[in-house]
Image: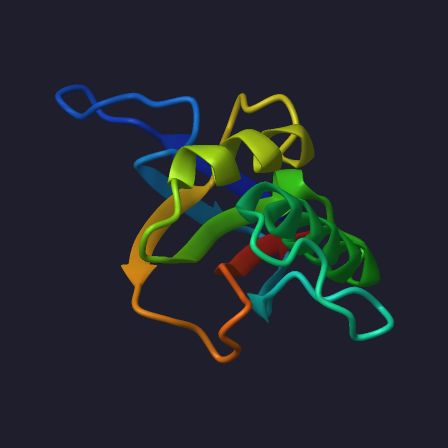
Length: 134
């Protein structure tokens, strides 16, 4: 059976272009779990100190690199867990991430959590991703 990803937004629940309410997977495929990504480049340097938009762009680049290593794209992403340091405006992060997320026809399920801090005091966000690729 071929890989299947279904995005569901039931009647009676809000429909938002940024996320789906439910995503199901089935068929032959591989589930990919991408650990929390920060705005660290391939040289180990922080990109965008103090700038949520720049950090979000680097995080999304890292996620795309991880997906590519598994022969997957952002269209295969079914779940994002986004951790943003308190005091940051999540809308700025979303604006920066939008260009990496594709056409937005079938966005993943998304959870956004405001946190007191992350593993490094200069990190403003961290994003985990789950994808299902065939």
